[in-house]
Image (cartoon, rainbow, N blue to C red; front, side, top):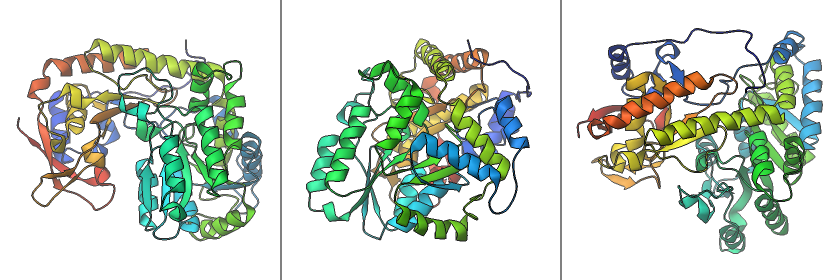
Length: 455
């Protein structure tokens, strides 16, 4: 059972199929454009969408809103330092702000960053600085159906080759995403992270963590990696941070907060340079664009998130939804992680070509069938077309992510998702593909406009 009881409830919007079809047309078939009151079960993201605990709300009431020297900041700093061991802690309004501050300070045009997989905003912030983002996922990640427990690992052989290769002097940093969100939420093993740290030290390349889901990664390590099964998630997390030179974190995930994040650094000189940009663009270093109450809520969330009972319930929810999904006849990337399930839309909808976005087609159909909002992670997200709408590049896999907000939906809500998936499968041959009508030059999936293309 969930290790908490419900104290406050909120009505769920219920709409008709006709209303949902009209809403999709209005937003040009981009699910990001929907109003929240048009969505019944919102699985678009687990970022900032979780439920706060009573202790978090109480901490927020005690927030110190002083512009400089807020007591809330010093409490936040103490909690982050104790968890991560990083002496320099800079609060920011969310994870992508930490990316922008670090990359704008550390990177020079023409340099390279290497990752197990850069997520969308991470890649965008690298490219906005005139640099190249290179993904080196491990070979096991290519087998979507295998039960390999650490498919989020970086490919150590390719990483070592890159660090020895002709472009080695251009490599500015290595960033490991925990868990690997762009790689279907799969975890990174401690062995892989430790070996990565050794390679980075040998070649003088800093290693950073994208630690948005550090606790979920630590839980999966305790479940599947020899030598760590008798350790607590908190102990694994502490060891994880100590292997790296610093981290970026969105506290909207494993901070169980609605807003906020931080940049943690060992290098005091780099921290001073980052702080100058922080002051100019985010806010004074003791608030970083956040209210004092936010800092206190994040600090409390960081102490709650490594509770084994909470993490076990999160894993149970993901397993329950995975079972419902398989029973409906939809393949997922195995094994299921904690923060999301990734549906194999390409396998379910083989009649839709990659440049007609089968993942997006499935996401739209889930909304039409049952008011479920999700997000495509396929060729709309990663692909490119020429001026004649012909494919130039397509994604390696056509996926749909069902993200699970923290402490928000119970088994009954997930049962509804399973029922909608089953109904969708029954009419899968009639699901149309989509074509782009209008798109921005960067991160197109957020603001593009589409229209259906009849099969």
